[in-house]
Length: 380
Image 1 (cartoon, rainbow, N blue to C red):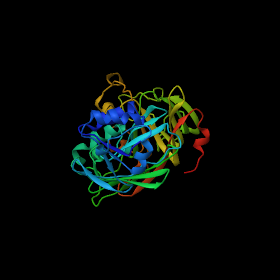
Image 2 (spheres, rainbow, N blue to C red):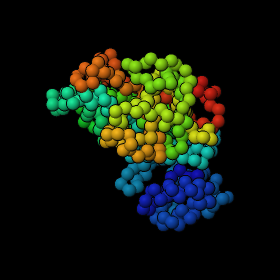
Image 3 (cartoon, rainbow, N blue to C red):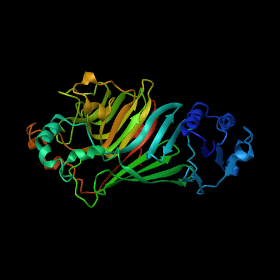
Image 4 (cartoon, rainbow, N blue to C red):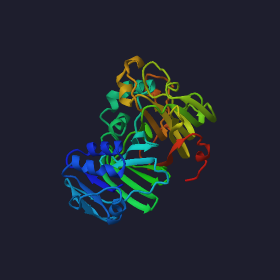
């Protein structure tokens, strides 16, 4: 396939067409459908496709790996993607959002949206009790108001997104963003994509010059497509655990996303698993995504967005979404609860996350089909 296609009107039309008709021969009708589109490729790639399809030379622009060009007011760098050992794996990178999109395996959509930094959790009963007690005193003080982390990632500003080739079978994507309202604090993340389909994810946080409140969560959220709801993990279980509620034994547990939802007085953060060495979310056919921590993760999965959970007073008021929202975190702050109506509802200091310290963690994502136990033991 070519390296780039620049559509004349709407990028989504071209992407959807290629998703439906991925064979090289379908480039011709695609170029016909987008009369101003230009095919960006190399002489080598065009020669390789010549036996399958005729591309008009006036619709082609030749560039080499590492060259750049202007399009739509933007300068794009040409980086040839890694050669996949298994052609059943494919993903796209969106520099505007800073993550992977449309990650497919065996022809089916696996990941709708790749990992992005996440610093917020849907408020627990204790979080709400403490906030109600402290709001009047701390709402205007960014150094104490931890609820400001709610918008830190959703409204962050992508400052840089770069792709580099490592070798024929691997590429690295680096993204950096300034967090919204966090006094200069920044997040950076890296995707190292391998020909096996594996993606090694590294998430980092750097504090800014201005002091900010404790961080509810330091982690990442990704969105799986509908149907990947069989949930297995090697960590603490079977009941939910938090860093100040780690009473469960370490073992391998199997359940479903729906069964791991825990009902409370109102929708809130729930079902979390700590000490997770690996976790897998799969379809009834055994196809899905495996995440392996380096060494451990805090993991949760649900069929509701955090916004849905915080808007609803009761679970029956929420409509389960098709996708599965998965958090792969370093940790989230404890649930606290000396009481549930005062400052004492907050977690004790040992179970808080200090936003004044740099942090980083990493994990590996792998598409799987059938038995994946051996994959959980591979070093990275």
